[in-house]
Length: 130
Image (cartoon, rainbow, N blue to C red; front, top):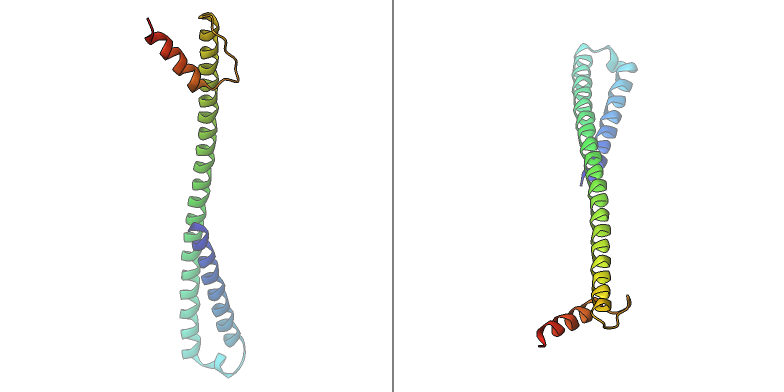
């Protein structure tokens, strides 16, 4: 959405620049350049355009700063998620190793290729039997 706002602001700025150019062209030549009233109105319009451009550029900078902040936050979140996945994988590997070691110490056969859930059920079943 921020990118859409940036595009919209750029379009408004281009329109204002065209308006400004049109007013300046009218002021620089022709019979209208000699009329005080036209010059005064053109001057006001130029001030309005400059004010609007300033506001648009300031808004654009704020939106762009927000977009960059969001991108940094997403990158931090991605890194944290990756770290959590690595920790979860390490915990799972540790659980599997513990299951295999428990099975080996209790005299049963076990290998790292066995499914941890089946091995855990077997161990639980063994604990239930007298």
